[in-house]
Image (tube, rainbow, N blue to C red; front, side, top):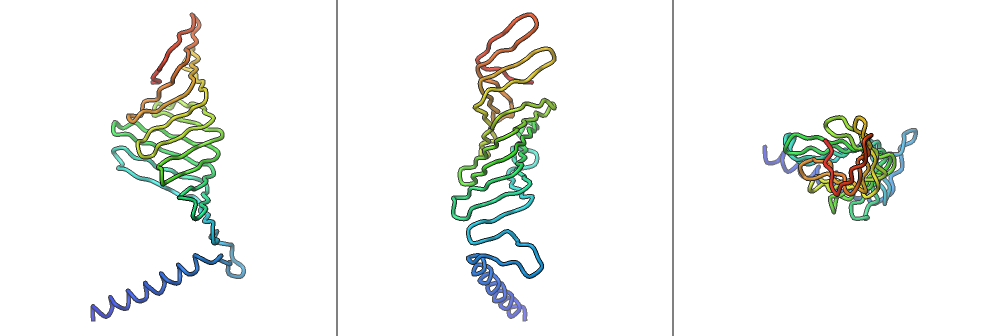
Length: 191
């Protein structure tokens, strides 16, 4: 009896799997009186998607968004609306990044975030960026646009920003403007 049940389950599963694959190739029409599920022959739309990898107490990332649109056949590129990223590091540091739009490329393990980008360090320091690229495979982040942030009475400017594999935020080529004068630097680690 047990084997017959397994065979019947396999046949039913294969039937539904084949039906799903056949339906996925066709544009889906919503049932009368219901909303479109968001799947067409070339586009997949998702609400509140979540992508994550890693271990909770070690290096990890979690990418969420208000919505995502994936063009089927575009090598895994997914456009994100209001992406939010959490990068966790082995030393316990957690950084959060958010923006208006994003482009997630799972094949290369990268995420480009643009528009009103905000990086929040574990200390609560908030840094406004124009854009940021996250390397999800190495838990690193770069922003190639000028950065400006304040620390007490100091204004800190940098040519660009990097986040190392250990979660350290580093400004590259910039200056610290203090009441008593200006200090120029090649690399400056933010606390």
